[in-house]
Image (cartoon, rainbow, N blue to C red; front, side):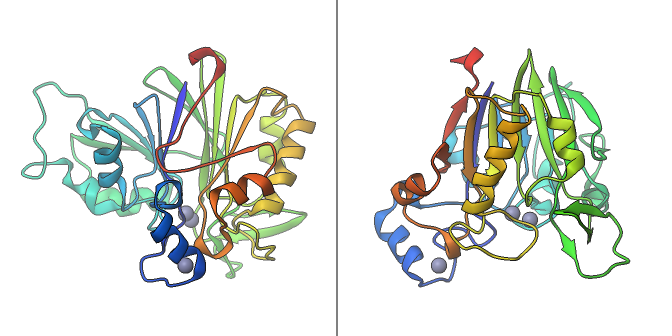
Length: 290
Ligand SMILES: [Zn+2]
Ligand SMILES: [Zn+2]
Ligand SMILES: [Zn+2]
């Protein structure tokens, strides 16, 4: 399998739309790997994960053709992952499909369904996913895991998750996904904080080939619950290796960076030993497909 990271920034992009901080100024000047668009990925050009505001740009940049896309998995409804108005453009007069073209099925949580509802039709279908549920799409087995994300201060918000021994409530049931085919596995783990005990139990012994992780906070060591940074990525790598979710062949990728905790690419490489630092357009392959 081939994982392509299409966008590797958090919600405000890098350089952030209106920002004049040192990192953003550096990124504008340096260009290349330092320019990061909003999050999104695609597996083998057929399984799309998330559809943020830069998705159209991603298609142009990487020669993708979304008219051929039939399976889209959404992690949560934050604006950098879910641009509903672009998805609404799947019907005439905004899009014309060849005869007998199969519909696009969009998978996601109840919040995704609510926002998509007005735009669903025979060309665009929705299938709700719950944590630890598996679906089959395009010959791939895709399992939803529970994300420590969309944390709400309202104890009545529902969707409880356990994080470091405490229970947190979420405004929606944010997900992340494990994608499997022919014994090869890719874990696309963002947005989320360090995984829940239930996630860890599910992933134990899976020997995943590629693990892509949220590194929003970068070098910042924050108390904030809902994202990871360098400190948490290194910790998660140890935990995943210890329980056999990963082994010495696993490729760890760090991505979804905010300008606030970000450093130049080479500096991020030094601070994250054992990780590939994601950049827009990056392709990572499982051993079978090399
Ligand atoms: Zn995000
Ligand atoms: Zn900035
Ligand atoms: Zn988010």
